[in-house]
Amino acid sequence: MAEFNGKQGVWRTIGGRKVFIVNGQDLPTAMKLSGKFTKEKTPKIEEEEKNMGDISNCALYMIDENKMPIAYITYLKLNDMKKSDLYKSMFGGKRIAIEMIQVNEEFRRKGYATKLFKKLQSKYPNEEMRFGQLEPDGEKLLKSIANITDSELLEGHQRRTYYGKIK
Image 1 (cartoon, rainbow, N blue to C red):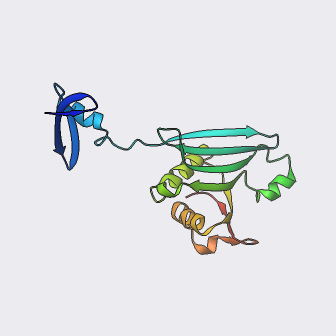
Image 2: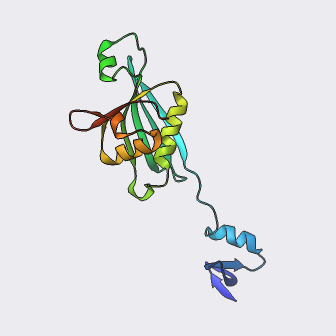
């Protein structure tokens, strides 16, 4: 018999994990309460849009169960394609212009950025998008999710740009 957090019970090792079983408690309940046998929860995606007249400033956030951001995409949406030649030139003739994507370092290489891009594409299924000033990591991500080649990336002022759909 042992005591843990003021309760009587026994310690058992299950699957290489130590679990405290309170007297009268069944094993599945003890395993669940230990938190060592639960699946990682799928992060939720939240959306934000601020209409600023001709354009909207938008974001998709992936957050964990503690409401902490894991990853995000910020983008601009042209609200009226007929209205402003200035915005059309800034957007490369596209309605959606990706500004930034960020994934916290400890969550990289887990598919979160891909999920955000797929959500964005599902919001605007018939729209081509402008991906501008790609950093090397962003270029790798875009190549993997859009199935594009180097020849499809355009040389910009400092970095490469892509205009098109995520395939």
